[in-house]
Length: 495
Image (cartoon, rainbow, N blue to C red; front, side, top):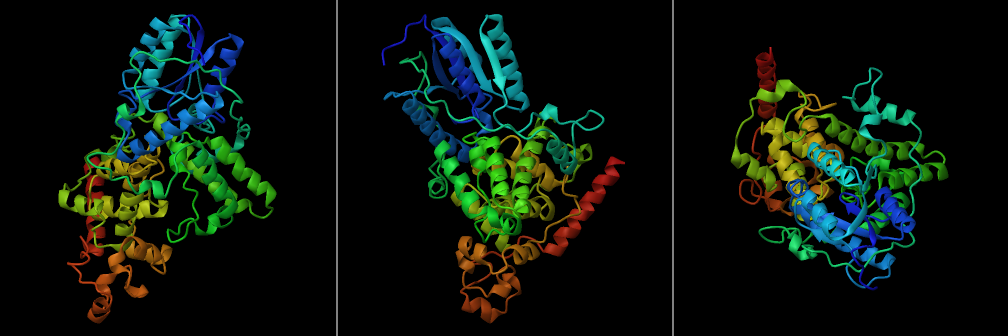
């Protein structure tokens, strides 16, 4: 392609958490504008001071891979051999000011984000662009319904999931997803201060501890579509009945793809709905799965309306909760060395793959926050850094739920017993044996409570508690009683 002069009209598509070509309303708007105005589309991604702090090591790993695949997909669509996606590491308003100064920018389009910092930034940029007579519009490319569309009968935001999801289901169903543009009119541009992917510096630090992530996931739009089709074809049939079993591969594992918008929730919703229509009698399992999309919607609803979901308890009485600062306990939890097999299995799965089964997330969270009385924000920070699907909405919402201080939260007196949870959801110990190999030869009846095993059983399994596998960090009964006492103390302090 020939170089583009500074007078050619340009429509910018500002990619953020929407790294896909199909069902991307902002991209469609940019293509339509360019075709109408005999211009070109300029795809841009900006790692700015709003996005950068939201990324942990695992999400940075994913983002690097996803940006590379988006660039390749854009180039292929436009039949280009050179780079198509323009990358910047700078303040977003500064980037747009530079582009306006050097090119004829006629329009800028993006898909909306819902955290307070992104909203404030986007509002200022949109106002500035419109003041410069540049067309600017934003779209819903991340949710089934906008957070402000779902209101209680009193016109307020929802605090409980079930009535929220019921209200969503009363609205018209999500419109069918759009296909990717057949062609995108891109220009051969080399922009001032744009950088290459390596310069974004997204690799995990201080070493590549994410090396095992690629064995489980394939970031990018095609990887997302393959994951969706594999789930619908092979696993959705059993989803309603086995979704809480970490020893079975039944869940969709679409959350990291949704986190970066490599697939839209509308694509997922319609695929599940089509499955239900094509398989009479399987509506229950499809509905269960779509309700998980509902939880994702609800977390963004809460994020949009909350003051600071990541730092401030939604229930004010938790502001002075008597947390215990125990760095040693936190370190053992992070390393999967708590002495509770189902907990340690989950934490090791997380470290090696960047992912953890949702049921196990609840179990490991309960141990940290309730038995160990560690502030939920410490768990949130670790998950933010190590989960490939960590996002400002889902992760913060989930930790507030686990802590008992969030919207529709787990009651504080609901304290998961890791032994009972393990025996119920990993009855044969397959999950524990996979991730805690030092317990691989333990008899099944003791796999979730090795401290109860007779000395001969431990010796036969090659387990020396306190040496080859740790003893429990805390007595479960004592930990539960301490948590309940702390809850009572909080209630008394709140009056």
